[in-house]
Image (cartoon, rainbow, N blue to C red):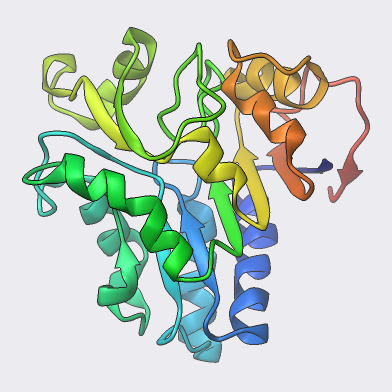
Length: 248
């Protein structure tokens, strides 16, 4: 596991965004795994700025998102499909037919069962982006997590519902279930980058980097992967004894 510590979330966006741009430039048909939430926003902003300046060609790129809330239509403002369109896809020349997000309505159970096969048919994920929950969840794999899980329906724990309530009119509007790529699905990626910022993520980052592998901290499953880079700001790295690569 490689650890990179930077100043703030904007620096995270620059470091990680450039890695994504490099992948596209080196392999126009690259397959990405993408995440939602506040953590990756600066990364997506960097990618958009690069596209505006350098016209990096995303037309042949394929993407698979980690998860989606059950009960939200794709055009719902808090759905993750809507998030990805608004925060990234609408600003690139990417073919939306090659951008996959789990379904949250309709035949979402059948689609979830097919999701890992769709990823495999695309050649597997070359680079997977992950955020990190305060309770150590990756995707919506809540503790205690099944490290052998594939994409499927998951229940959200109260702490996750409470954390995500800020995006909704009230806590009562937050869905209690989601479709999420499983831990095994995530570990199938060739390379993984996890990002986290802010002091509220410091305990989870410490468990991820220095803790023992435990399903009570789903993120620790990443210790079993051969190519993981953790990019955090100084606040999120605040409890670490490990010295990472410090980029300011």
